[in-house]
Amino acid sequence: MFYLFIGEDSPAKDRQLQKLKDEFVNTGLEHFNIDVLYARDLVLKDLQEKLSYLPFKGSKRLLVIRQAQELKKEIKDFLSAYSETPDKGSILVLDFGPAQKRDEFLNRLKRRSKAILFKSTVKPDTFVLSRSIENRRLDASLKLLNQLLSDGEKPERILGGLRYAWERGIANPVETKRRLKLLLVCDIDIKTGRLKPVFALEKLIIGLCAAGKPAH
Image 1 (tube, rainbow, N blue to C red):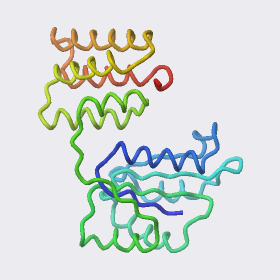
Image 2: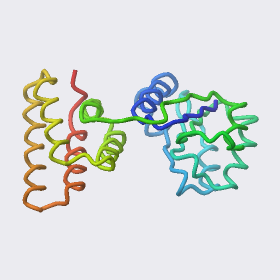
Image 3: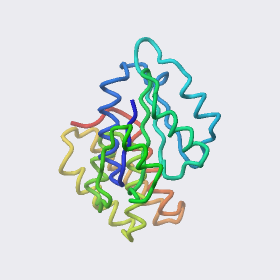
Image 4: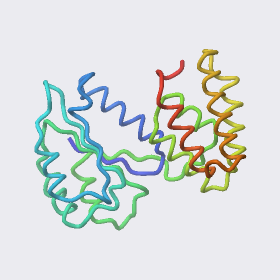
């Protein structure tokens, strides 16, 4: 099975990817049956090796290639041929950024795969970031943070927005206390110059996503 994710809405992509995991990958076997690769660092030999692996214990293998628009030509040629007769025991997801109308490789794959289009532009805010953290989506949360900073959002406003969301949106008082404590440490790290703001915020998000289960 062959899927194309096209667009920039990372949280929506993560939700769709989770649906594929829930449908095709047996619980407890994720470590054996899921691989996430990045196009920029990918070489053909490694891709062919991953595709040759058999699924473990009756599950299906899920292989995700992030930033697929950066694939090397030899890998594009291989995938064009592979898409004609994909392995039935594997699910291959190519995660692209915004589609280019004249992208011959992408247009060729569209005819042989299930293409899912996502919003090309997403304007995140701290509430979107807080929901991503609550669901323990570390990669998506870090991407949202970097987008907020790139858009000019101030670190203190990000911290303030997270505090506001969690003081009003989390029912578990123990979890609320833990998060606010981590926020305070981050704020001190930034104000004292102990860490650069971006590093302090990334450390905060890693800590917030690391422990416990998603809040309900």
